[in-house]
Image (cartoon, rainbow, N blue to C red; front, side, top):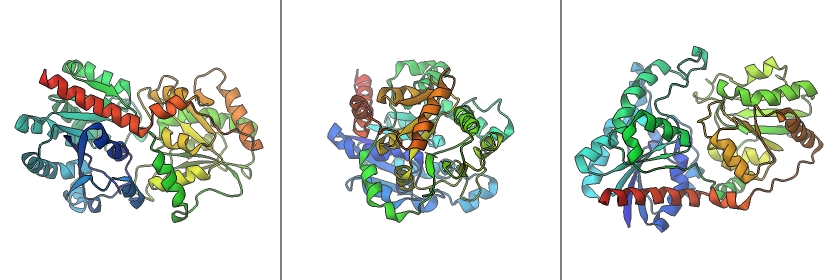
Length: 424
């Protein structure tokens, strides 16, 4: 059995999107010939919300190595709240010990807390253990460089320069790349030509069916967020100005229809990454422009993973807007598909998310620049208001192709290819 050491600063029960690939893959690694261990930050030292149900899906035999980082109450005084920066030294010390005591064939960084990835270069030089980086998001990116300050992430000036400095260090000795979007790999290979000589694979997040069952069994643990007196169209996930192009066609149609707020509510839930109570609405301002402030409800506070799944199950229909960034690939689409609810998706037609939904044969998978986007939205909304939207029938091959088990197999195939390449 080969051994892989997985670096994931956030892990169950922490309710962070970037640990979901690891969590959903752990049940399948052993059957594919890999003994996986996870090094994470003790959840007591994170300020991200927790969902204890997440831990129930982690196999009991998985070793979790938890480390204690610098306390944020001290580092925040100098503006350093990042879990990656706070845990960097402690990752070095902990993994140094593990590598000396264990026999790991591979180190696997699967996180968007990218600064920890620079340790891969150090561990490779010191111990000779190759490493893979999972690019769930872009690391160093120019996307926001020409955006107004109001549309940039917090502390963008510092983050941009830190990422520009750190990314080359991590890429210097990386032995393999995984990415949710082929565009991320293309960008990295253009930036660092030596990456053209290493194995790489585009592997989206997978659909993890056990989550749906676990959510159904625990639906009384969370408060209901949706109105029982209205027809509810629901989106759960981050917001932002980059999604306005995808949301605008829906709002434009609703404005034209002048649908009573007593009949239809459109929910946008968990749109901000800010701490609870501190999020700034990013969708309501757009709704106000279309005169839809009574129809649209934006709840900026993020809710736990299983609370989100339960809320999706309680909706009458679901809405998935995409980013105007063609490279963006939303991991959220699989929980939407697993609910079996009618789904309206609007995105950049060249994006990975659009292509994946096309494989599932989603009836209302629209590009925001499509000539007939308004007519297709009209058909969807007509069916929603009349209560006669049919239950989706997704392509069975796509369901199997994008299952968490299949996505884990692709990861392990890359692991094996990397080791084979290095032995040649």
